[in-house]
Length: 620
Ligand code: ADP
Ligand code: MG
Image 1 (spheres, rainbow, N blue to C red):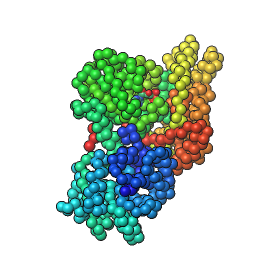
Image 2 (cartoon, rainbow, N blue to C red):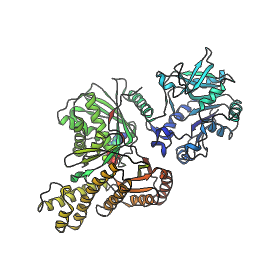
Image 3 (tube, rainbow, N blue to C red):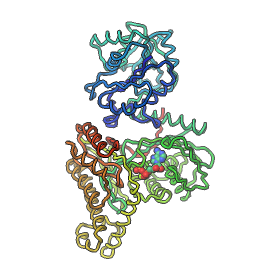
Image 4 (cartoon, rainbow, N blue to C red):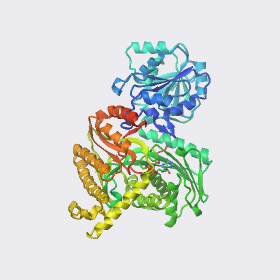
């Protein structure tokens, strides 16, 4: 038997997330979506080949994914955009023209399911052409799928793709079995009549009228991942299952989601009482958590494999593991007298860890938000960031500012926040970029000197402030005007002078950048990003070789209005303001040249500004 997994779509409903990443390679429960299908296929005997049909745009990514994988043949259908797509039927034809005839199992690459395919195949072998059928509780969903009506023998007597007025709750799903000798014949007949090659369901709608087609009703869970909510739902569903598998049966779990963040501008200003302007991005940490009625907190993360870390609540101590981040939150809450019981925590995340997008802030905020909700601690939302920051400062021992935890808690969809770190007043600033996007390029280097150098910069700023306070009535470096700086700069050692000048200018730039966003002056915003980078490189000295290579390559691309290092420095990410039409070229060219020059594969993400940490009660 041969298997065809359809992965050549462009997932336009999930743009911009899927503009640069194939939907089928997005991570669910710690592995690419398609691997969940591969796992199911491993249980089938007699599979000869698994054809994964993709497009030219994501072909390289699939080749990397499929390297060294058994039986997998990756085919490129040659299309480069949604407009050029061959369509699901066109893609099936593309595959069968390139292989000898056989039985075929066809699966859409964005279907996630629990059922055993053996039962399905056995049914098909007895009956003939067979498709999967699933009862859907919400009739509105049927309108998005295709609906079928089966007779008593399981034969399809009615089929309608995307019905306006569904007649039943049975949906056809894109899992098809074709016995040997039939697929090519019917497919050619269908396509030769000039019929729509796009939706697989339309072929079945045609086919059942000329030949017997059967429906096999699956009982187990099934997800068709068409949009971001279904993607979240699938993640939570599997996380919930894992929670039971790892911790045993227990109370009902609760689900939470928290984003990563990127800072548009305002770097190294937060701990100097200045402005920052971050937004929350569509990379997330997911949490399934439940009370365990013991005085123990158990932590597990799919990013740190199967290791459960258990801590007695009455004796919270550092573990020197990743769990110190959530544990720090528990410790701070205990110290402040909040009363809560034991809980089992299971985390899963697609925020790169240690990549400068604040996976640390996200895990802290999600932990605190969940405890607040499930134990009714009544902590006001505005206080959450400060408690989390305290956890990171005191318990973990990293001297981070307030920005990360603040944005991850308070973020609002389609908005950045302009935060004044001297008094924590903030405004939402709508992000309207027209034809432009913020794109994050990850250098995938995180220099070991980073935290030491970060603390050194803080100390240098404190030193500068102390000297200037002898002459001026200022509380933070951000109170300093450029005129005052000019007057007293000779009092500062040269190195400190550079650091202070960065802080003053960066603060100004951040306020100007917020006005640019409000006015929609994207070009000016780009210039400010560039100026910020030059200042961080030359005055604050927090860039590094890889960042400079990435930046140099970035600036070669037409359509880039500005780019700068974002985050603490010495590696991590750059944020780039780029025209949407230049993105594909950017990823190809910058990706290739950066790899050639550094030997490191970079990562790219096109950002959407999303809401802050939420409880996710939407689980179906
Ligand atoms: P970042 O730039 O991502 O915030 P940090 O070094 O500040 O990098 O924080 C990374 C740390 O946060 C990890 O070493 C780990 O301890 C914790 N962490 C973040 N995300 C996860 C996760 N999904 N699972 C477990 N620990 C995590
Ligand atoms: Mg961090």
